[in-house]
Image (cartoon, rainbow, N blue to C red; front, top):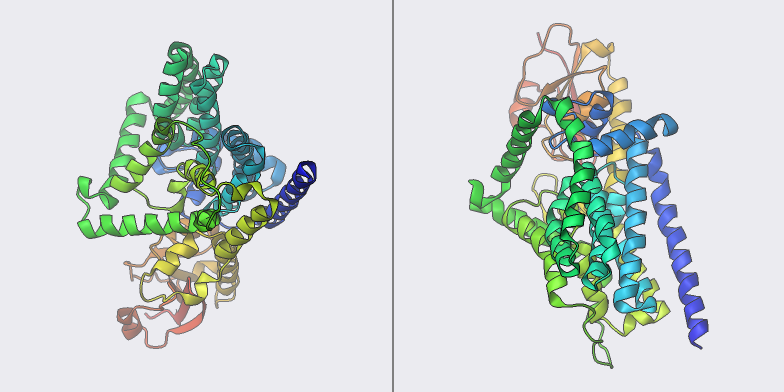
Length: 473
């Protein structure tokens, strides 16, 4: 009976893995930038210049290097970014399964991995040309190594610190917020010195060339600090942001976590048996969870990707609290179904473009968002091409200020043949024959409509609208 149940569990796991890949692989064909940052990574492949935010500090040098290697093989930078994101996610899920098997047992590990794999936020960043999937990979692999060090398996120290140093070259946050866990685990195993030497060697191997390309260590440090302080001042009350902005950030973070943990709703199902014994000492989970949770609570959580470092430990705890239900194969299917229902719900149908709402934040954290942005930008390309006049006679004002595409940064990269202007600049140069405004779904602001009474809405949806008018002398 046990062998039959295990066979069913493996068959279900393979079927879900194929389903996950079937949903993810089509996004390799993505043509346009996903957001402000993804366009900067693309610019960085063409010309690496951190001072010009190509890409933004700290530079993500190994991510750019990987893109330079992969892009000639796949043809487009965006495709290379999606492939990298997918590979990091898959590798992270494999490491998480290994950790869950050691922590909860082999049967519950399948369900716990399904909780993570079909979490809407995980699915989102597996198909998005962004670096956040590196955080998922880092938190799963480093925690797996740290757990072994915690048990006294000293041979994993060098690998653990090397992973932290190398992933920092792709995205620094993972190594930064996991370093305390790794240090304590290595200290328990009495391998701190060898770990630090290995980690420092691997980190310097990419940091020194990056500093040299940027103008020196001092220049790179100044750029890093300036970028960090700019970010913190926009969201954290401790760095001068309004209390209302900080509270709004916390509410958004709660929405991101709520959607990401939908597959873990299994913990709410009544159980007949008591919860299984604790899978690990509380200190391990505190060190794993604490630093990143403190940062996104006190300082910054601008996007759903910031919670990826915290999801694996929360999923492990949820699977433990739900025991013995995760041991049953049919619950793995229920977990995947919950994640898919939450991730692919049509949130855009309930968005009020004129008012920022929680629904938009849920859409932003779901795997529906990349497809919607891609189709919107394909439509915008067709609409702009069909405007009267030659490319140099078209002037488009971008009034969209959100980080997700389309915005001025992504548009100037994706549409270099068209004249673009900031929404605050209403000057129309002489060559312009047709002008257009790229707005949010609410439409053209009243002040502009009063000046251009002949402006007409050409097309749009909940995420954007395009308006056109003949240029006025």
